[in-house]
Image (cartoon, rainbow, N blue to C red; front, side, top):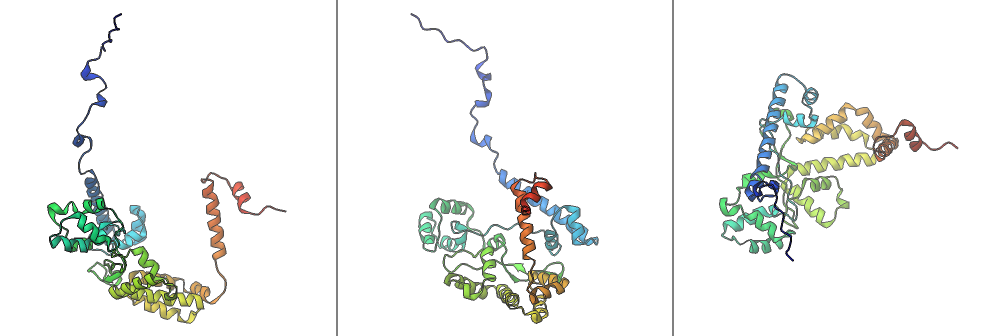
Length: 321
């Protein structure tokens, strides 16, 4: 018995399901898409910075510029003090990132060591937690163009504490520039701004051995950290001990410290000085009110904002007996 013949399709083979044709890899994904997006973003930031500068030169204050352009007051307050558009800085390197050992890798590369496996084993002794593939990918561009110069590295670091003063627009109010934070004495990576901020407000008696060593490094290599930590500890002592009489002296020292963040904080204290004195001298606190506000917001968010006032009242207030 003869097998049935295959039915031929009336659609030509070239026109059948064209969406499943194999396309070369280089035609599926356009190269350098991420780079073009970054360039477009930087262009938008430069245009927005130019608009902020124009409005500020025309006499608009920071709040009016923020409302006009739809950006935060903090961003406007930072941009009006700069002479050129701000450069978006890279994230602080983590323990699993080879960028945290850039100085050592650059030194060994310039000495002639180009073997990724050997360099991977060497930085493991300094606390590197990443993989060999990560080191190989990090070193791959160096084989064509060489390692980046030191000034490029400093420009790509995230801002830390204030250590030097740049040339900027408003000299009496200019914040110090953001210099790279020093390296951790235990793992060789740069200390992140988050860790530096946490160490700045922690008393010496509560520091562990590793934290105390990091604090010593930050004090030695970044003078702004030492000044800010001294001011923070003095303010903490006033809050704990109720030293209301030292408040004016602390505000004056903070205004003369040269640290922009401390000057802004001290200016805020001066605007509401009577309330600050009462907070230091009396035993009353607004913590109960703030706690109830936080509880109310939590209840609203737990119901996705779709509840009415009756449901909120029933959940917020105790049931009548």
